[in-house]
Length: 57
Image (cartoon, rainbow, N blue to C red; front, side):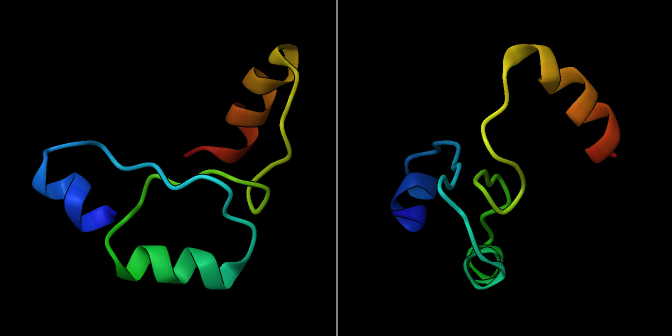
């Protein structure tokens, strides 16, 4: 899927990443847009800004 999306010029976001192993596999496939419980549980809108300030460089 990653290869096909790249070939079509599409952005790639891996969803549902829950383990360090899954993260490493995706990084080895040059997929760096990732979301999932490994990083954070779903947050209410009012908590997103403070989360981003604390966790994003």
